[in-house]
Length: 177
Image 1: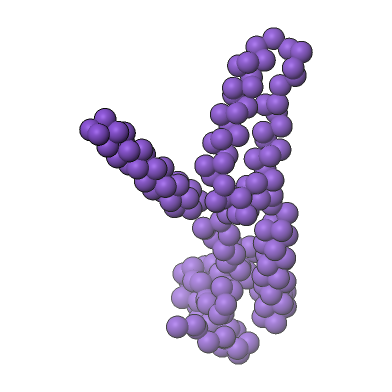
Image 2: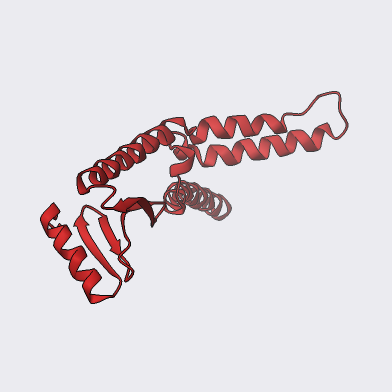
């Protein structure tokens, strides 16, 4: 359940009570915005920012130098900046196909160099490994998780097992017959 937003009058009253009590108190203003009141009477606005599976506190200014309205506006700007950054990050990340093709270019060998056979073999091995992961082609590289890779590998593994089972059955019948 979302906490209702606090009014300016309620905030003033809460801050005065906290100062009189002589203890540190955090006053929730709603929407991850709060005022931290120290026993000395010093009060500051903070906004909890959630990023990368954690949270950080951003100081927005001292109370009453910064009003409740200004603190809420600053918090909204931070949220908007986070959304814009997230959209920019998603759109700028390459897909697995784009990244793997760039990476594979490092293994193309010069036909005039020594060990051409070994380099060609390495290139072919890497290229076939990328084919196994072809299901990842359209995923953004920073959105690939172990669960997604497992799903892709398990589906290709089932196909391989089915083919191997078929070949074993054919060999078995050939040797019996």
